[in-house]
Length: 355
Image 1 (cartoon, rainbow, N blue to C red):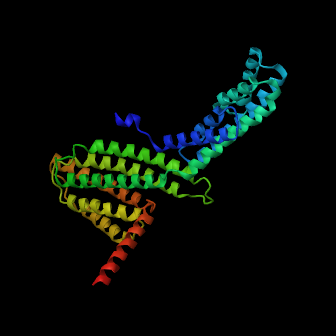
Image 2: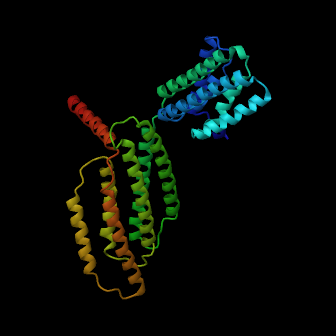
Image 3: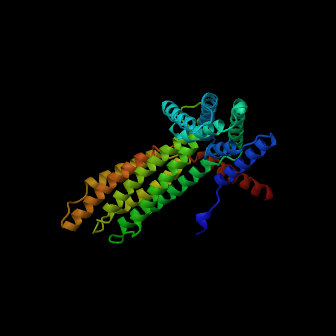
């Protein structure tokens, strides 16, 4: 129930932009403040870049409405027929300019100007445009000053997803060693990760809009989206590993080193994201040794042995794919890791000085 009436940052920003726009317009002595409030409301968006795009579109529609309202007001007056004719021209003009979303505000401006006295039409048109301009500028200023930190939200989401993937990897390793004891909530956790990845991609999209003015081809937002897409692929691979692990009816000796390898990949995944050194040669050597052990395995004697060993072989292939994919993860949490290491060093120096 409380979430239904939750007042977020964007609501507060919108209310502040509307109130400040009306205050400025009234202080300048303008008679009508409606347009300033409308433009301020629609200009306040989740990102500063989106606010700029919306404000430019709204100011263009206000200018078009002012021009059409002034022309038709001077030529046809403010009769019902004139309002109908200007509405037709507004709709056709907006469709021609591909401004379908601006038809309503353009028509409101044009009809509002035509409804005023003929002698004051030009001056009233200028006043309306200035009101809209004030609403847009105020909304842009507030959106710039109180812009949300989407980068922090994306990084938090990345840490949460990485932790969930690590838990799933541990579950698969445990299932390989404890045949018949499957994690009951594994499928639910996989579905939750997919939802979290979707949310993370939306957040990274918002952060990408904040970096529209960046001169580099690849932005940090692009790296975040790349990591999230790879996480999505890894989650699907873990589901496949889980399905193979629960098929293992008998204990296979090779399952223990493979389970250790999977748990080792949990650390590799974290080190890759934080930009730390990974000993790939040791891992490659371990994988080669495991492949040699598979070749030396005795032929299965029972159906249960055949299913268990076949599942383990396919599971090992999935783990190798997971390893290769992990090597492609961008170090998106490197800065955070560097800060933690610096803080750790400072604490160690402080302890040494105290001694």
